[in-house]
Length: 152
Image (cartoon, rainbow, N blue to C red):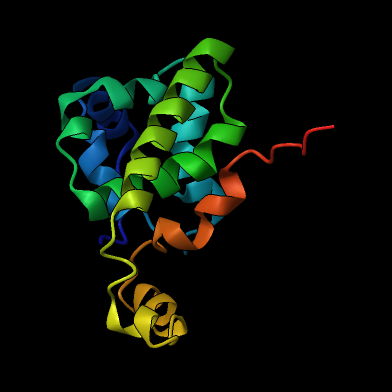
């Protein structure tokens, strides 16, 4: 992970080509909010200079493996509430991210982790923090699922 900010022109070109998907893993949450990659991408999107939501249509997106997908998902979870975009495009992007998250939640690898099986799940969170990895969605996926009202 680089501490140097990605130049604005590289963000614009990378968004158009899909290469920005690979750069998103480099973004640093410890930077000042306005200087972070996610904040700069949101500003460029809202100014009409890039279409951040189009990244899910790029071939690099469909080639992501689990770890890199979760980094991208965390990036979008932070960006989506602040983006100015047509409702249909926003909903399509969220639906796609949710479909992939659902598939991940059905994977049994998380439950098979020894720390999880023995009840020491905080070790998983500590390891994520130490290695600067995103928190597995199994910890937070329930928070983004819609709550359904009980039948009357």
